[in-house]
Amino acid sequence: MKQWPFIAGAVLVSLLLWVGASAPPKTSSPTKEFMRAKLGHSQSVLEGLALEDFNLVLNHARRLGAMSREMSWRAFDNPDYAQHSENFRRSVDALTKAATDHNLDGATLAYFKVTLSCVECHKYVRGKKVADLNPPRPAARDAMAQPSSENKNQPRVTS
Ligand code: HEC
Image (cartoon, rainbow, N blue to C red; front, top):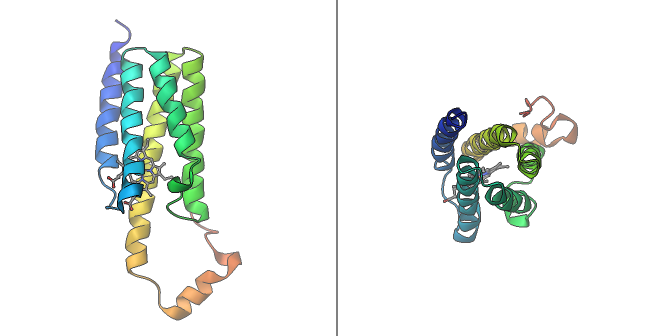
């Protein structure tokens, strides 16, 4: 059964997903519901992969892609968050393409990348929340507000 390594991998990914997704701090209710829905869709994608049901994968991958384009997705308005969102979309697009081609290995790999981008963005969001609780002193904040210096030297997460 050549599928077994993938099923084992998928189980690992779901564990990672659960750990990563359960970590962000709480938000207001509608946003919370919206954000939580991502978890349901990614679990359904995993189910589709494990059962080689490409329609199930496609259905929920498309929902994830559509969600990432909605207003509620934009919890933060800054270049880093936009970059994380872009990485997420790129991986979801790869997942959609592989599922359309009935490429199970490719779809499983893309799903892994989607999962990584969930976790990466959540790490960023948690860091940002901590930073917002400890704002820089006014002088430092003015310096940071200069458009030229903003986020220039931040490392980018690439997929
Ligand atoms: C581009 C950034 C980004 C990506 C990618 C992302 N999320 Fe989130 N997620 C957020 C933000 C922002 C929150 C809200 C955090 C907060 O409560 O302040 C959140 C919250 C959550 C929550 C908690 C909701 C609650 O109950 O409060 C879950 C679950 C979740 N995301 C699942 C996922 C899953 C699964 C994926 C990948 C398929 C994913 N997210 C990808 C930004 C992202």
